Every structure is written in C-alpha cells, then in structure tokens.
Amino acid sequence: MPLLTSTGHIEDLSSVMIKAKSQPSWTSTGLETNPHWKITLPESILSSVLVLNHWLEARGYTWQSPEARGMKIQNLDLLANVMRYHLTQTTGVVLLSGFNVAEYGESASRLLLLQLGYALGSVLDKRGLLYDVCDRGQDHRKANVLFSSTCTSPGYHTDSTDADLMPGVVSLLCLKTAREGGVNRLANTFTAYQRLLQSQPEVLRRLCQNFIRDKIIVGEVGTRSHLDRLRNSFPVFEWGHWYPGLTCRYMRYWIDAGHDKAGLPLSDEDRFVLDQFEATLNQEDLTYELQLQPGDMIFLNNHLIAHDRTEYIDWEEPEKKRHLVRMWVGNDALQSDAPKPDDMHLSHI
View (cartoon, rainbow, N blue to C red):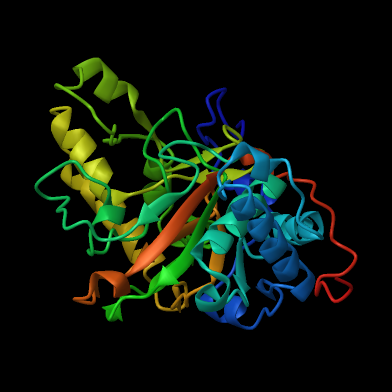
C-alpha cells in the first residue's frame, strides 16, 4: 500500500514511522534532559543588536523599516543554523534567553526577533510581520476572534487554520508576564502519532482524513459561502504536503466551529476520535511546561510541536499586562537536510 496520496493524505500508517525516523520525537522528560535546545544569546549578538538599533533610531528608522532588513547582525546566521538543526533534527523547539528587555528596550527585542526570522527564512506578513499577543477583552465564544486576543486557554494547537497557509516556524517573544497563569505547554505530535498507532490505530486513521476548519479573516464582511467553508478542509495528520515530513494541523475549537457553521456537525464517532487525540497530547509524560520570562524567545516547528498556554489572570495596571509578540516564518526555515553545526554551544561567537 502506498504511503500517501497525491494530496498528502496518509494511507499506510506504519510506513510513516520508517519515513519519519529522523524527525524529533520526545517525552517531557527527554526534552528536559536535553540541554542543547536552550540557548543563551551570545554577547556578540546582543552587542550587535544594540548597535544596529541605535543606528536605526538615530536616523528615524524603526525595527520594521526596510533599511533594517538590509543590515546584518554579527553571527546571527551561525545562530540560525544551530536553531534550524534543532527545529528539524533534535527537538523541534528552541528557547533563546539572555535578552534583558528592561535594559535593552522593547524596540531592540523586536528587531532581534525579526532579524532572526529573516535569517531562518521568509517572515510571513499575515497580520503584520510581528503580531502582538495580549488580552484585548474579547471572547471567542461570542465573536469570531483569535484566542491570542483573550486570556483563555486555546488548548493544544498548531498555528493557522487556513487550508492555504501553513507557517513552518512559530516564534513567541515574551515582553511581560501575567499576574497568574499563562504557562506555556508543549507536546510532540509525532510522539502522539506513535502512541496512537500502537494503541488506537482506527483513531489515527480518522485523523489522517479531512476535517472542516473555521478560519478568521480580519475585516471580513458578510457570511462566508458554504463552498468556501467546505473547501477549508484538511487532515490532522498528513505527509509531504508542506515540507518533506509529517505535518500535524490541529485546533479543536476551530474544527468544531468549522463543522457547525458548514451545517455538518461532528458525529459522535468523530468527537470520540478528537477526544482521544486530546487525551494523548495531554498525557502527563508528553506535556512539557515552561513559563517564558521577559526577553525569552521560543521557536517551534509548527508541523511537529503542538502548543498551548494556560488561562491567566492579568495585572490591573495597563503597563504591566501580559504581552507577547508572535512571528511566523515560512517552510523554507525547515530545510530537511540541515547539517549538524560544528559547534552546538556557540562558544566561538
């Protein structure tokens, strides 16, 4: 039986295990004991960012000016190579720390994030090059809004519910933390695939078939056509459609909403399948939790790593409220043949 169809739909569940043997798979303990994906930003990069930011501001430019893109930050390409290797070969996640937002400033932190995006691949300008993630007092149950505009937990998900858009890398820069909660949660979907193949192959087989997804279009006017809703349909797991490997695309809420708005509510069987997938992702040994601190930047392979954040209680003072910045980078950031860097610790820069 062939591995997949021409559209990326997986036919032979077991063959994926052989084809994807080089893709990162981990439990929370395995991720915690691997020190290499947590990288302290080298001093040479921090210094170069501050010099470039000062140069731009002195000339009336900003971190997003075209002039900024044409400039180079020392050793950033070397760091990007190490990150790319981890994103594709070891963990699927990279955490950068060591940037002091209070000392260096928010503008410099945005500049570094965007420059890293350019060094990795193509920065996607879907809702701006960088999108501010903060509670805007909105409620996803009352309006078609992004979970990132609320303080509620979205549950485990990958970014983008649009059939025509699949970011390769999702990055979050932390500027301010909430008063309580807002803990980031990670799960490896390839590990979840492996477990379902062993325990519930029929559940996995359904996940390799299409589900309708609702999507948010900023400024949308009127009602989306029935045909458009039906077209925005794709599997949770597929192979080789966006890049040479296994892709997981999932967010339970927008699957439920997509089927309901299309007039095709999920069957009891489909709800069971999605419940089982949720339960697998939420297994204690598969969930890795971390609290991003101001200045931390996390990069996720969006094909492989499902992420979530817990519900949070924010500060009363506007200047203290939780604030993250999100960036999407295209699939060119995930070159499957990324070589192992000569120095994983970046000690030479």
